[in-house]
Length: 606
Image 1: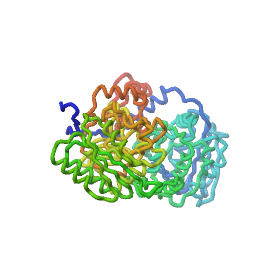
Image 2: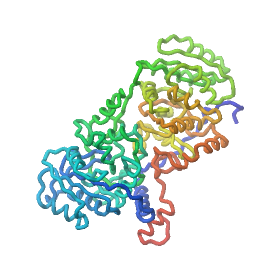
Image 3: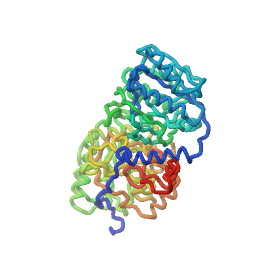
Image 4: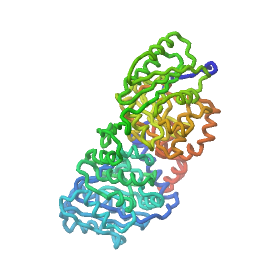
């Protein structure tokens, strides 16, 4: 037991091994998907009725929308091509919908013989009479123009895009339509189905994340939009070097935040995606007057946005670093800040919380005596018993930066320009807090966002992930919205910090950062993981080394409802038992629905 008031920064433990994530453990995924589908279709009550959807299907053009998985071009039906089955499968899934609140618009691009009309008629069947419209466009019409013309012809209040091979679940239209009752955009999860019916590549998406949509068109398929907001945003347009669907979704969601996620796999994709350019993201940033460079991302069809601080040329930053002895850590932390000053004016505030070693006095004196036009070093002595919130609050009150950067002394290293990336995010008016990606000295992942309800009250998703791995759906390497970031390195505007009253001095280290972020979100501000900024953190691999049951109880009394409601940026179907982003085996109720659907007796599902 450490002496009263002593901080425990290092308690080395072996990290818990991560299970295979949902995208790697395909046997488990297929069991889960079958169980979930049987439960959803057989036991869940039907969703409330929503607006009618017109399903827009374009056949015969290259450049199909390249969401996650894309869609192939189709040669004329009747020619015996391998692609014929994709159109037939899509049409069959449309006619199998559990609701009648749909219509279908099929646009044929190019010359098709009479056999295509026969194939369409046969696939749709007599029950579709009156709800199907077939349009034609000349050869060479690009996908965006074909979809735009089809949307202009629709009389429905909402549309849903389909490509050849997209197979909707029977309740897809009903559930997307129900989601649009309170939203302008609705999307659901997806996977891929091979011609032999095998499922793979599950994409179990997070909730609405504006930051992630810049990194990747993660809304993918299926996605449904109200026509009014889509038209108001400029409608569908061709893009010379980018994905028209990504462009449309970026423009629509700039005008509305009413975006709903249906957390079930409602679409099975086929084919491969076209490689698209960055124009959709570049133009979005220009419209928003957000200076940034767009680079190829860490995964195919993703982008890295390297922001630059807007407004004044050199924003002022106060980096607050509490410490107690540990001279090697403090030196490395100060060097990391100095090396990344770039285009900011840095005030380095060193908070000495009771150091006693001569080496510390020498180092602090050396740091304070350095003369650097871009850095001003201030040393504060605060000998009270260690309270992370109190030390940082007092230091913030005496500092001068418009951006406050709270940094633990065991943070070091860093990718070039990391400080500027954090400051650029923190100075955005809708962002309340931002944190970097943190790794252990052996480059395993330590922090890429905090998830509510993960292995307890809160947890670091994918903590312990091996170096070089992106994690499920790129969660470890893509910038995105999160519920909270760690106080080991957290940037926030001073005006936000003052409005929130700083950190809660009644909470311990393990919950104060989360509490601050949740209070910022409660005021309508976003919390962002800036994955382009990476630092080394020497923290113990297991979270919770400085918390206690009393503090946890206080946190849960305040935020228990949010924890129980589920983290909006973590798919609820992913396991909350550990940090792996894995799937659990189907529970007893869901497994029972599977057995009932198969007509089996009561036995366990393997």
